[in-house]
Length: 301
Image: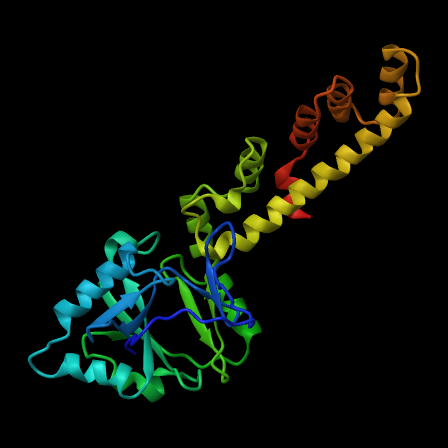
């Protein structure tokens, strides 16, 4: 679909940015748009280009567009046929971008574009490969299709899937899609990125939000946020106890009396935070409250 014009309009209607704050993921209809998902469109000159996450300049987008131009022939009409699919038929092809530099865990034996689905722009209807497979260029591989009895059965199989099988893209009859990754693949992925409750804990102690760190895979963002929030919640609970003790200690005449009260009301691993607060250092008090947390034990609860 070509852009014919861009103009400013005055409107009170709402606009929506599908970019998620901090980690810059994009969601559409509740579905994560992964950085290896390529979306085909026509630019202003009628040339086919591929975008990832709304970026035309990402490494994946540039590689995919170059690969498409090198493998879809203009001489035999294949390029014009694909252009007609996009412009004339109003369909937006979606592909998975696979090449060695984009690999994290699995050494795929090929590189190129893997056909997934096409979206009918006028209705938003998602066409599976059974409906649109023949419209993709012949150079694109096709994702294998499997019928499953239930999501429960699929999740059970995912637990025993070998490490070199990433998983599946699940598509429901209404067009909704989601990714299911194998347990071993996720485990190796986690090791590859050094992701652990301890690592998240260390980042927070350094004053960094781990969900804002570039490079963590999208499938771990929920785990990152959950662990981060649990650590922060436990930190705030401990800090409130220390502050409550401080309010009582403020009524006592000497530091010795205050120390005895802290020993009576607080656990031994919280008295350091109490004295930090007593000395007028709330930042250190908060850090000491966080330091006492066992992130591995917290993650298991």
